[in-house]
Image 1 (cartoon, rainbow, N blue to C red):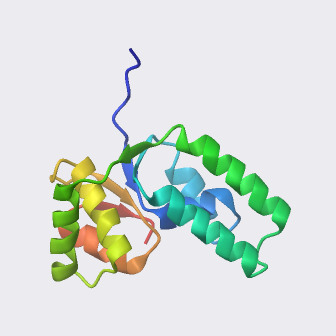
Image 2 (cartoon, rainbow, N blue to C red):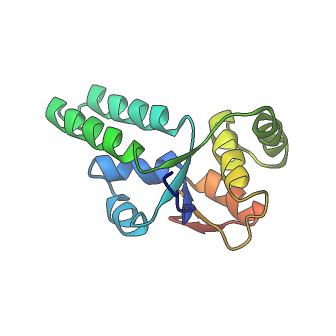
Image 3 (cartoon, rainbow, N blue to C red):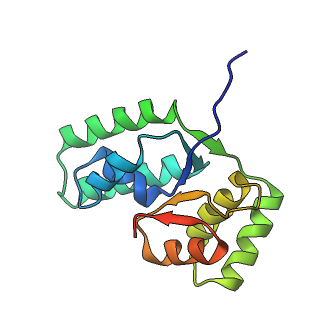
Length: 146
């Protein structure tokens, strides 16, 4: 039986996309993510969506997209995913009432809270999105990135 180390940080997709393509947040992502990471179950889809958008916009080449997609597939093997549940959905619904979050960001934060066993004090939340970072900070996380 394989022992899984508890991740050192919860990572929002905004902190992960710069790992796969060169962006202003890439230096932060590379330095901060030398840790084991927990992510929301839908984060790989959010990253794939961001990569596809960058390709459509011409910000990356087809070759860059292929390399990024391969790195994403490899990285997924190392991440611990917080799976969807009714409790997580209820927490996300409460979060949108407390903070000016979009639904996807509410699920990210709810997953972070689930990972932290609803005790976020002293737990790392890596994020490059200001609105989500502010909400995570208000919930008690130690936010890094913005």
